Amino acid sequence: MKSVLVLVPPNIPSMDSCAGGRYQATYNAAGSKASHWIPLWICYAAGAVPTGRALDCNVEGLTREGFLRTVPQYDIFVFYGNQETVAYDQETALLLSEAQKNSLIIFAGPYATVVPEKVVSAPGIHAVIRGEVEEPLRELCRNRPLSEIKGLTWKDGKEIVANPDMPRLDDLDSLPWVSRIIRRDLPLLRYWIPYLNYPYISIFSGRGCPGRCTYCLWPQAFTGHRYRKRSIGDVGDEMIWIHENLPQINEIQIEDDTFTCDRERVLELCDALRGKGITWSCCSRHDLPGDVLAKMKEAGVRNLVVGFESGSNDILKRVRKGLNTRQAQEFMTECRRFGLRVHGCFVFGLPGETRETMSQTLEYALKLRPDTVQFAIAAAYEGTAFNSYLREHGYLKDDVGITSSGHLTARYDYPDLSGDEINVFAHKAWRSYYLRPSTILREIRAALTDLQDAKRFARGITYVGDYLFMNQPHQK
Ligand code: SF4
Image (cartoon, rainbow, N blue to C red; front, top):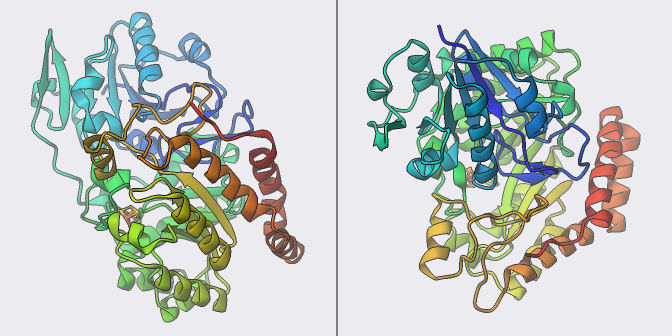
């Protein structure tokens, strides 16, 4: 069987490209060999074949030169990248193809799925796997000819050939537990997210999201709108295995796009985990009723990651969020009642954004008072309806949403609101939230009563402090 390396390729310095996470981020402690995001997708792919290995070059401290100098021979390399890093990754792939002439070099991930011809046309790259990697990779390892493998776009001499799609994998229980691959291949202690207990580990309990939010990359470009689920028996067993076999782990994050969209299933998992002493977190929409939240708390849920996005109901409607600000307020009241922490995600730059709506969103965040927050700049990923909207209206000004130093930036201008203003406002929002005495006091209080919170707080200070004081808004 062929040997396979699935990798997060070496990045532009200081860029945390987040090949397995939800969006890219700039890791502010550059050079620390650390990342927020456990690259789940590369681990699932590496686990799909017995000869697969995962490598996250960035947390290993591998620059492009270091990677090319030290990487052993593999039959197949799968580069898992994103839109913001693809040009750099293509150059790395070319250098690798010159060093390892007999290897097959393949690109995968949402961007490669959306524009496979564009990605594969670069020299040194042999094929793109469109969509999820596991099934096509299994067939490649069995030596099946490229022409017969569904889901591939590949080079046949000078011609680029697109094979039919590979159906999405439905039997997710057939995949090996990703936690075992993470333990085998990744330096687990180098990943940390300021709103999760450290160290954490993440898993998928399912793939895909029925939501239709126009800015959201993953369901539109990669995983689809059908929520495909593992059995709760399999998910619960994996979480219990983590608890028993990785005692250093202080939190398990269920990284599904929206784990809570099937409430019956959430309650089933709560039943399976109640009394087991496992601390876990998940992504949630802000529409869960109090009785479900109470059961989640009882079953060990500590934190919910919630996309509130905007304080403007008009914007929420335009982006098809399907929820409104009143529901968010009710949800936050219930979370507080049951002692669940909330990490609130807000975003600036969505269609309809004005100076007034940005201020409205900041005020909304201050009023909702999630325990931790992030203020993102809407990323116009290729393959999203948001990207099409910007293109159709002539607002998009650049293909890449990062500066040369790896910092996020709005790459669009609205007629009455420039991308630079959005960048500046996002920076202001971070300061307004985290420098508020009530936020600081609340975090200190939490840290004084819980050892895990104290550790999280200490790490969070370096991250937020660095963000607030060292980095300035990045303008092109
Ligand atoms: S509900 Fe969340 S994960 Fe689903 S499409 Fe909307 S933003 Fe994306």
